[in-house]
Length: 224
Ligand SMILES: [Zn+2]
Ligand SMILES: [Zn+2]
Image (tube, rainbow, N blue to C red):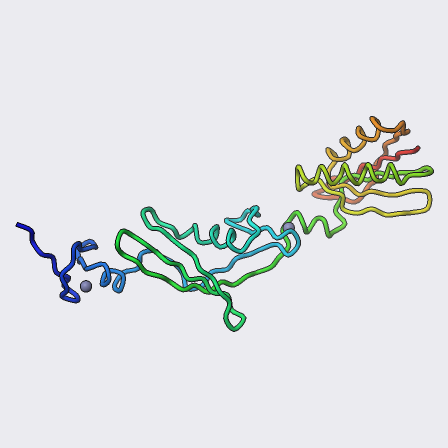
């Protein structure tokens, strides 16, 4: 004999009842309970320069709106609950409808998203005057050499964001290149040695004091 189940809330016959102490039909369950704990409003922080997104304190490689939303909402997913996101803009506000599915229960929550644009730490360094090493290129017909330095710098930045050329200055008799790391400086110099026959001289420039210690920048003079 099969016993019929009735929902205590709506009185309808139902195939299954859901819940702990108080059990309901699928429709009533989602009226009374929520399938996931989702806030009414969330903030998503992105970098205005490189477009990366800040997630749990880290700048991560999520660039499209879809990827950024799915990262942000992954914080609220629970086991066994399927989540689908739908988004739209309305009166200059950005909304996401989070569809939730758990067995035969379904529900949705509307969440307002506040987009916050800032500069990530890597990009902030690009903008500022921060540099660790300077290459002073001097000589004649330097265009070809300069191209090698800039290309190598771009290649190194692609491999590691903390390696970058923060500035290039064209001056009388050559160029000055401001590099973010000493490691990058070494790689560029070995590239120059392999392609040209430069005279290389190192010196240091005192740039100030930090925590009672003198801070120097590495200056490399490259002559051709
Ligand atoms: Zn019911
Ligand atoms: Zn950035």
